[in-house]
Length: 142
Image 1 (cartoon, rainbow, N blue to C red):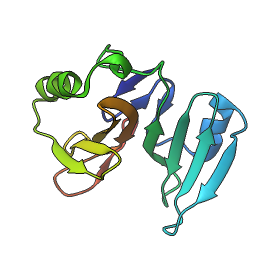
Image 2 (cartoon, one colour; image 1 turned 180 degrees about the vertical axis):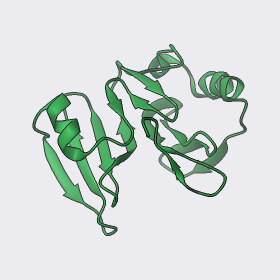
Image 3 (cartoon, rainbow, N blue to C red; image 1 turned 135 degrees about the horizontal axis):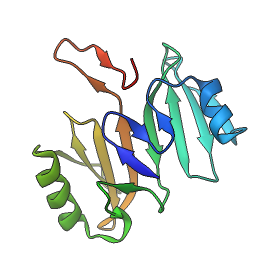
C-alpha cells in the first residue's frame, strides 16, 4: 500500500466512514473510542489503525505495516537520518523533532506526516487529512 499525502493509503481515502472502511477491509480486530469521542478502527492483518473523527470521517492513520511505501520508497529499512533527509527534500518542508525518550517523532506539520523512530529505525508512520489556511479540512474526494 502506498501512502499519499493528503489522500490516505492504498484504497482508503480520507473522508471514508467507518462502514466504508469495513466494506473494503472487513471486520476490524478492535474498535475503541477516546476521550474526544473519536473512534479508532484497528486491523491487525494490515497493521493499521484508522481514526474516525467526530464528524464520522476517516481523518488519521497509524501504521507499522512493513509493506507500506511512501513516495515509492520502502522506508522501513532506511536509516533515520537518510529517510528524514529524503522526505524533507521531497516535501520541501522542515520537520519538527520531538524526543520522547524511548522514541523520536519527526513531524512534517504542513503535510500532516509523522514518522516515529526507535533505535534509529522507523517504527510507525502516522498520516492525517490536510487543512487549508482557515483550518478547514481538505477532504480529497469532496
